[in-house]
Image 1 (tube, one colour):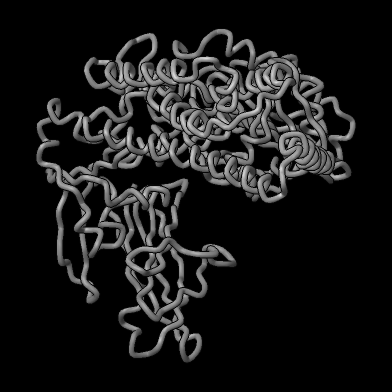
Image 2: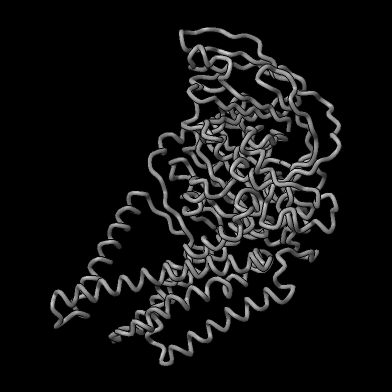
Length: 609
């Protein structure tokens, strides 16, 4: 977005799909909602995050930007959520809360995203890290089933989503653009804001310092409450008896946690053995019967067996507090669980352990939440009946999943599709020896697994899949299993990938890698200069031999803190993108190595993407 002031507000959304009329959640929705109302200048991005980097580091408008709004998506519906802000610059969150008619924000999502639990990236990081510009990062996360599929079109986006996004962004842009201090926002850069929703239209926000005080206050109140309750519960008891009761109570709670986790793992393994894993994928409600219920039963059963309770006369008021707290917790669970489930279909979380990942995620959330629910079993007169009802729900759900079509994880309903994703590359591979001669050349389809059932689920539909072989043996001898990776995030799942021999694909632009010069910088340091030629997108993988260290390179001033570990060696992945095809890419690498190891100092691969 370009305004007529020296310091400007920039609204960004990118397009990352080559098919017409697709990817509307990232490009069409934000622009349709608010962009055309204000735009007096356009910057057209066609290369996703890479183009954002090119703009913010090289375009003449980049220096004029005071703040930005980034619009992302990993789904095609629901309310847009503010999930990253800043860095620092608390005024951004304050102005958003003041101006947006339907604010929706959660700082926890920022912490989750920046901890790399969600395998994705946004333009926000590019503007933040390379442009040093503060901003707000919004995303749509619901209905991620259609994300990057043929169903990703305007029909998949509810009209209410467009209206909600337009109302909020229109008001926000107007407020930010008219903010007097936008001319020099650095004066208001100090501090960080904590923010979260407590009701659909109410966002609570306060400074990080206030948040620390509130946390310490509640910790102190918790300790005080525990001490007061302990004095009441253990009145008349000796110190030894009170300590024993306290230890036993903590042990029962801890055993309940462990029992619930182990039970869920066993359930997951049984369903996996019966080929009913991921049954929750299209029907998230099945999670309650499959994983909530057994966890509740295990934890409640231990408390029932323990049986040494004193009913507190204030139990009814405590119950009311629990219900009030759970109301919001449950709502957030619905949001973040769907976010995690659909994101696993997007990339890394899904694979051999996809089923167990969701189980672990359920365990972590449910165990904490159910600690407030489980003690309520003492208020139930017929505890065995309550446990029986919950157990029956679990058994009926398992029966429905294993004996009926409910266990099939995917769905083809045109109104709400939940398709399976299989990432497929048509590949021609050439392997070279250390002397530079060709030692192996083949071609085929590289199938990267995005969930537990890939690619076996399509074997009956695609006969060639029956010829697929697992590449795990290649992973013991070849760098990155000899497969072309388009992202470093793929590396951890390569040994679960499959290879189908096939004819070579047409190669329109040949890829070459040539060692140009070797320079001795010191007694132990050698600089190797290379020239690579190929298409506009290439990847470079470098792995150093034992007793050799990569100390410098031409890509950045510093090496990454640590490389990817592969066969007990450090490996580095560089993704190269150019605006033109066939341009020579020159780079150098400095290796610290003894002279007798000089000929064996590196293994390199250059996959063409």
